[in-house]
Structure formats: C-alpha cells, structure tokens
Image (cartoon, rainbow, N blue to C red):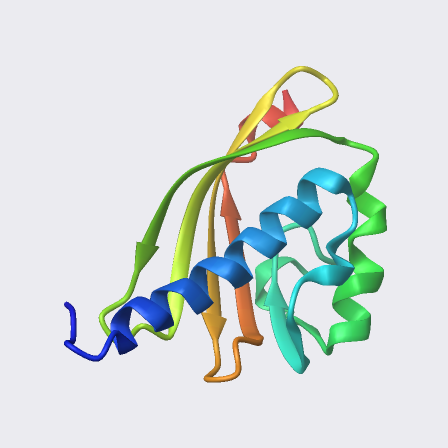
Length: 131
C-alpha cells in the first residue's frame, strides 16, 4: 500500500512514532512523552476491573503507570503491524520483569490524524508474571 505522494509513508511514520514513544517510555519508566489524546481510552488487564473497564483520559492513564514501573526491567520491540486504514498499529514486544521472567505482549494503539493516541489496548501472556 503506497502512494506516489508519500502519504502512506508519512502516516506509517506517524503511527511508528507514537508506538515508539510508548515503548521507549515504558523502558525508561516514564510514559509522559507518549502523545496521548486528552480523552484517550486505555484498556489493560492490569487495571482495576481488567480490560473490560477502560481507563479514560490522559491524566488517568499517566497516573496508572507508576504502579507497574517497579516490576519492569528491559523492553524489546520485536515487530510492528499496521492495519489497512493506517489508523492503528499493533506492536509485538517482550517486556522483561525484575523477577527475570519475560512477558510477550501485543499492544494495539489507535492514532488520530494529529498523531495522538486515542485508544490503546494491551494484551499479554500473564503466565510469566504469575509463576
């Protein structure tokens, strides 16, 4: 999927920048640089109520992360996947835990035209975190 005017390439770059900001922030234990929209909807199995109860709003999302930082070690992005509409990116990554175990994650970020994350849904295999 490419266009002569480079719009596809530009859009992929925008999606990639948002995804990289998230995983870089996770690795640095500071996601404040992630371009979350003011009204972002964030779903994670780690939230109170799990993925069924989204965390809403940028401030609430940023307040959530310090709770998990102490458990994290390194973060390694494995691959990126774009949807056909180029409004979302899914990132396969491995997140190291201080316990020495590794979580295999697939996080989906939906990005608006301005490059802001308007929705995020995190998925992972929880077994290494609970063993």
